[in-house]
Length: 288
Image (cartoon, rainbow, N blue to C red; front, side, top):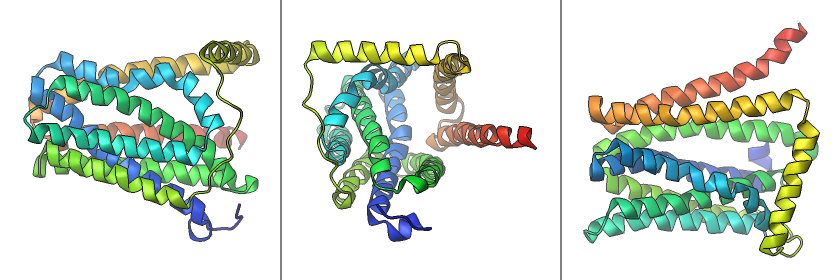
């Protein structure tokens, strides 16, 4: 670990991790615009779009409690490398199917399901890896920079995705997303391997351990304000799903250009980002 005022300048592992994150977020920004637009182009159906949006999130939500087990027991860097390569290859499959005249909405759904799991593995591994690369007293600053900078860049990348989809088309934009995702892999080579943990438990043991973890967590937060915050967070996240669906269909039906969709998503993301920082300022305001 390296403790210095400038993590990007002096910590090569942190820098490599952040650059790989930038490449992966760029890929996500391109596909985040191109894939919904592709579903609408293939089907013209709001129902099919809603199903695609559900398939983007549901698999990772269902599997997230179990993804931590392989991440804790294998090299987190390796999990991330496998994830970004898998994401890149999955995205490259769509232009390949299009070139062969075999691209269907069912193929898009299949890609979205696997991408959802791959994304969950990548982000869980990255969250677990970061503390091992930075001195403990600098971890808060590293997390703040990492998440703040990548959130801001993600907004920019959505705009690029909208412009690219309108300018060169959906399929070339997906090809660019595939290349960007694959470029994240060699950047991770410079990040140290984390030591493997305990052997992977069997399915029955894993289910018992997950159930025990949930019971312990609920026991800790029962009777505290965390329960209210958790319930509020669930409601807010569920409420955003129809909102994203709505702005996608409005962009398609009213404006007919992907850049309008990107603009509405950017406005939504900027609002969320501003809200996050506003919440951080509340304790400071009360303390004055």
